[in-house]
Length: 380
Image 1 (tube, helix red, strand yellow):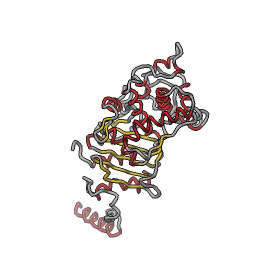
Image 2: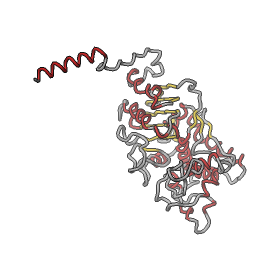
Image 3: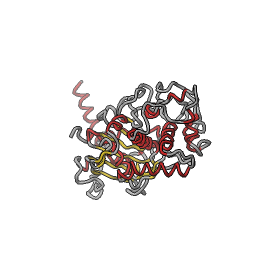
Image 4: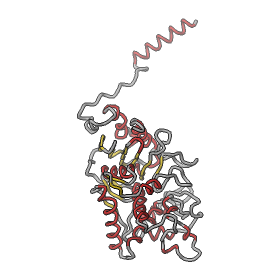
């Protein structure tokens, strides 16, 4: 009986193989040298292998749409690919990657002694006696734990797309003076008690930067003073010549969402943080500040001082990186629609991905970035 069954199975298998039912999928055709030219000859990973990990970002519909992918290893670009219509001179919107720039800019003022991390945040509207907002510190703001009633996105059964604070602040009734809108919101929790990711929180930090630099209320003065500071302390020392910060009509830097920069400039910022605030051996931002940015906040292990960290988030919160597939020292600046600057100090690696992937389907794309990074050695 067993021999008959085996014979029948063999015949069935042969028949299926003859009609293609059990045939292995055809391997992708091997790419030629011209098609792999976007990968440098100095890549430590074989070109074909690295391309096989990069290609899904551009070709797999689940990850659409990647517009730029840049990999720096040991300070050199080893892979740089763009989607149709984009190139190394294209400026891409940062969305929330800008928050990490703002975190670094606050660090310059703390290093200068003009701001103190654990002092009450210098927001005039909060200084009235009995106002609980007067207890909010810079640390609370940088850790997204201010306690302010800021709703980032629409909620099921809650605020609609027209009521969410980020949309109202940036595009509707708060757009003329984003800082005034953000700073006027009431408390919903004790300062330092609750993590709530919020673009409005970063706008408050942007306003603090400007108020620290000038007492003027003139929008042009506010804008020009802040722009000179950003260029002089960050953009020019890093060689980020293709980067342009945006401002609201009141002269407040839109440091939660709006920087326009090339992929190479975003990579330069990632490398700057990978080197703990130095470029070409010259120290610009204190190591202690970068370490603060890369240290977990009390209310979310995966969030530091305006940087995301490769650590497991509390139950009920979406994972943002890949804590099961890479060192926990990986950190990132992340933005709406899949903008990413992902840095791994232990791998001497910075990866920039720019594009337009809806936020509710980011997981496959983010996981693919993790697979790319996992190709590189750790501790080399």
